[in-house]
View 1 (tube, rainbow, N blue to C red):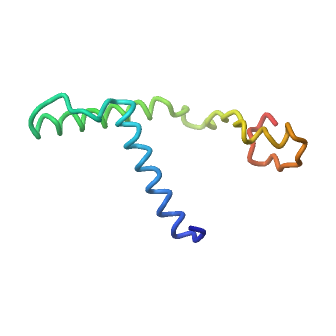
View 2 (cartoon, one colour):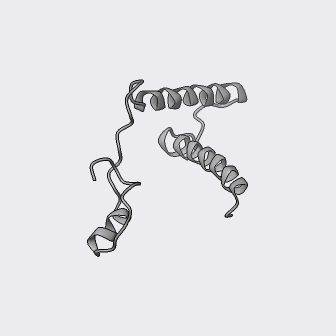
View 3 (cartoon, helix red, strand yellow):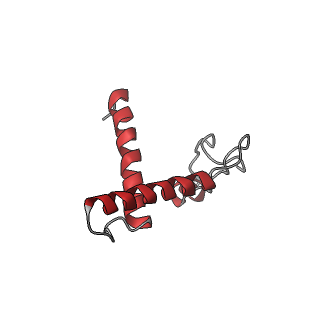
Length: 94
């Protein structure tokens, strides 16, 4: 699990699983509302198009950096306990 080859393969798998999770939970793809293979396929294609449009809508305009995410509780815990920690991975506000 420490080799770069394994990490590259796992990164692809992680992306695919995230997409499947988004479609299943965010767009109701656990159940098909139509009977028949052709209608079900059409539903899947249209849902995938919708998910892609939503993703494009969340992207920042070209040329701008994406907004930084606030630090998580885990990332803030060294500060709370007085542990020295590099700040290079934190948001630009720190």
